[in-house]
Length: 542
Image (cartoon, rainbow, N blue to C red; front, side):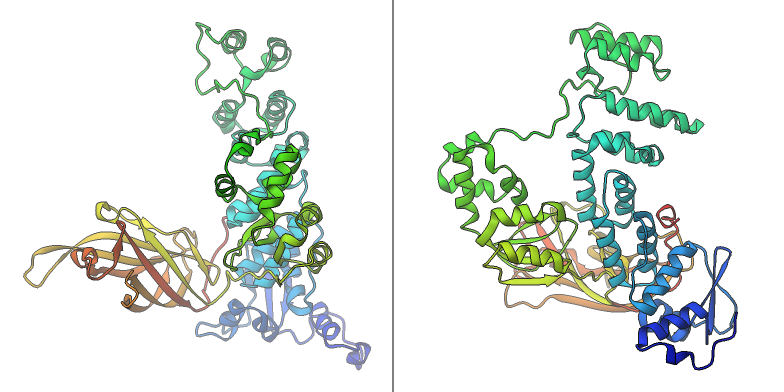
């Protein structure tokens, strides 16, 4: 390391460039990370100011006490350096979607929700048919459901371009299987799907033969003409002569005496993106079609305006009578009551706003540019706000309704709620316990599970939780029990096996059960976790 010039501070007018200088030069560094084969210096105070994970690492009860190199094995050097650059300077330094995925991985690990948000915005703005499959796999792993939906839509609409792109040959076969299972794909024929599979077999390992057969089973060969099949798939080594004959005879005749090869699709309906006719709606009473339109996505209603003049008039009447909110298609946020949400991407935002006009009242957006676009077209806009992600929050309250409770025989799990970037789930089950007379009685078991699928064997998270059984009677308080425990890889579930007697839960006077369903609730407050591993997603970080 070169010696620092004298009075180097005088070179910079503001604080941020001075802090950036410390990062770039390593001056006054008091910790170092081994990332791959590179040593990256850092400053404990700066890192701890930004991340509760670094705070726990350097100043917590199990803080590092020596000055040895801190190994970082699950993040690539480029992504780790970009993470530190954001901590020190608030600048996002990524050059492609893959780098943004790797940086998101690091931001999630070190609990930097604002950086996670910026990475998602970059990924969304850079989404294209060239990288959509990579992003699709990324969203599945990190459960970014709104962005997952956007990826599916892009794959469907741009299927031909996606299938012909060289990057499609590198995606997981499980992803190929999901794409080929989609009911709607904009392709000229199933030959495009087969061509993509045929190219894929050239780079396939020996253990992929059965997976390729599963993929072939999703191709609708019976929608091809005999000539198309003979000049294309029939020449491929993926088929035996008997299979060629079997498929060909079934193409020619639906009453063929030869059965299709095992697992092959018998569907004769071509894939299509065309929606059904809306003319039947025009003959309904107004109250009827209003009720129907309440269940139709607003985006589909708006983009179908030109079906006919009658339909267009009906749509405009409907839109003028409801409160509408607009937000990015990858967002999961819903907080304004009595508002129908319109999910759009940036490319169609202006078009939708122009059609909505004065009907739009609420907008939840992720960028100032989007808000400007909306404001220009929508004079009645009452509320606008910037999207925030809170998976790194320290506490949360979430509920779960258990249906068909009286006939419940085994455990049921709620969807995950994220606190400290860890998935938390409610677990409810019937249990048998001994009463004071040593007789068995049925009880309600109520548990809280944390991070159950993480592969790390050394993670831990200390948490306080209040487990509640909600009464449907307005004047009754919920029944609750509290606990303060340490969740870890060896014990990722804590709770109460005899939370309440089963008969007491069913007692109508207590009001816990309604329509054969009960509602349970958990309020959890968690400290920063230790040793959490995200090793199961390395490819996007590389």
